[in-house]
Length: 114
Image 1 (spheres, rainbow, N blue to C red):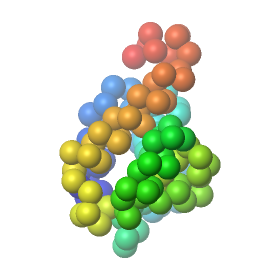
Image 2 (cartoon, rainbow, N blue to C red):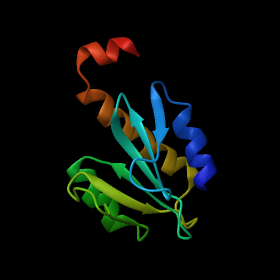
Image 3 (cartoon, one colour):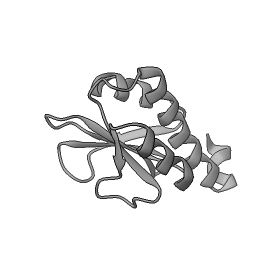
Image 4 (cartoon, rainbow, N blue to C red):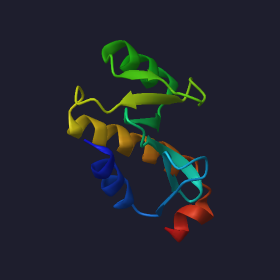
C-alpha cells in the first residue's frame, strides 16, 4: 500500500474524517473525533496505528517494519513503515483493527449516530 491507497481505504470507513491537525505532512484519520490512523506523507511513508498492547509487542517482534509508535503512547500505538515489506491485505487488517479499537471505546450515543 502507498499513501493514496491507505487514504482511500480509511475514507471508505463509516464516520471517518481526515485532517492535518499537526502539520502538512501528517494526515490524520478520525472516527467521531478519535484518531485511529496517522499517515506520514514525508519521503519515507509510514503510518501509526492503534493496537492492543499485547498485539503491539507481537507485531514488533515479528515484522522489522513495525516499530513503537512514533510520538505516540508506545503501549497502544505502532508505527508501520510503508516500504513494501508487509502485504497490503495485512495492512488493511491492521487499519481495521485500529478502527475497531476506537469504535469499541465510543459512547453509545456516538455509535448510534453512525
